[in-house]
Length: 406
Image 1 (cartoon, helix red, strand yellow):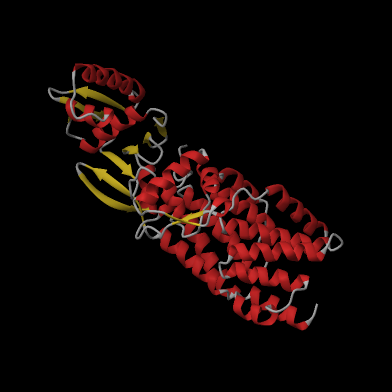
Image 2 (image 1 turned 180 degrees about the vertical axis):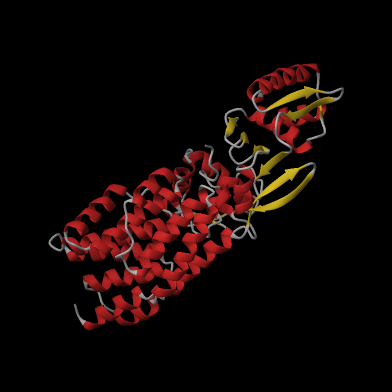
C-alpha cells in the first residue's frame, strides 16, 4: 500500500475526511475509491459514498476477498447511517465470516456491532443484548470500545436501567477521548444530553410536570398506581394489566386516573372514549358495559366506583394514582420519534422499525408533511424523510421498545 493511501486511511481513522480526500480525491484505483467512499460517508454524502464503495468492491475483484468484505461492511455502515434498514443482513454476516477467517478481528467486530446497532434501532432489545454479551471489547481500538459502550447505554436507556446507562456513557466518554475522533465525542455528549432531558410527563391530581429518565424508573418501581400511556398498561409494582388492544378501556382508565381522587362525569367519559359531543342513551348504555369490563380487568388493583354524576377510581393499596404520559402527544408520535434523530429515513425503514405497514407509514408522513412536521427529498426509492429534533425532549422513549412491560 503506497504512502498516500496509508495517510488517507489514518486521516479517516482520526475522523478527518477532508484530509483523506486531499490525498486520494483524484485517484480511481480500488483502495482510493474505498477511502473516498468512506470519506464521503463521514461528510454525510451517503448516495455518493455508496456508489464509490460499490465501485471499489468491483475493482478489487473476486480474488481479494478480504478487501471486498471490508467494502461490504462499509456499505452496511452507510446503509445504517442512511436508515436503509432493508440492506441484506446475510451479506453483512458473510462479510463478517470472511474477515474472521482471514484474521481481521477488528473489522469483524465492527461488522458485529453494525448488526447489533440495527437490532437496537428496530427495537429488538433482547436479541441485541444477547449478541452484545458475546463480544469482549477489551482488545479492540478505543473507537470500537466507544461504540460498544454506546450500545450498552442505548439498551439500558430503553429498558429503564438508568444507572447502567450513565455508567456506560461515562466509559464511552473516556474511550471517545482516547480515540480522539471529534464526531465520536459529539455522539457521546449527545447521548448524555438525551439522558438528562425530560423523558415523560407525570399527571396527577390535575397537575403535570416533566420527568427525567431516572424519575420514570423510580416511579415504575414504586407501589403507586400508574396508568402508563407509553405501553397502554396499568401497573403497580410487578402487577401489570395490559390494555394495549383495548383503546376504549385505556381511554376510560386514563380519564379516571387524571381526575383522581375526583370522579369524572358520565358525559365527559362518553365524549372522551367514544369521541362524540352529544351523548344519548345508547352511549350511556355502552359506557356501563365498558366500565363493567374495566372493573373486571382491574379487580386486583382497584375498584371503579359509581358516583352520583359518574365514576371514580379507587386503588386498593396505592396512595396515589399517576398517569405517565408521553412528553409530546401526537397522533403520529412514533414516526416523529424516529425522524427526530436527525437522520433521513425511507418509508420502508420506518415501517420496519415500527412494525407496521409501509402504506400506514406513508399516510402518516403525508399528514406530517402537510402540517410542516416532516419534509421529504428525493424521488422514488431514493425518497427520504427527515425533521429537526424535538427540542428539549428525550425522544428515545417514544420508540417501539421504550418502556419495559415486565
